[in-house]
Image (cartoon, rainbow, N blue to C red; front, top):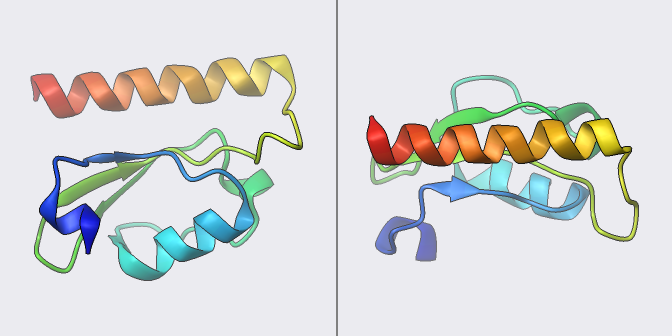
Length: 88
């Protein structure tokens, strides 16, 4: 699996299908909502089957643009997660 073998630690699944696929291959510490609208605006910590740490910040598919406040919240979560992964 690509996630196990590459330097990927931060995932941003876009849409319900991507959220479902990501949730099926990563062991997350919290329950992941099945709808992207409920998951968006939150970050989720998880591990791959090989023990690699992953942070996921879901967002709605680009064909359904979220409200401006929601976009900012997700963007901030992505930046915070990236900084956390790179700075400990």
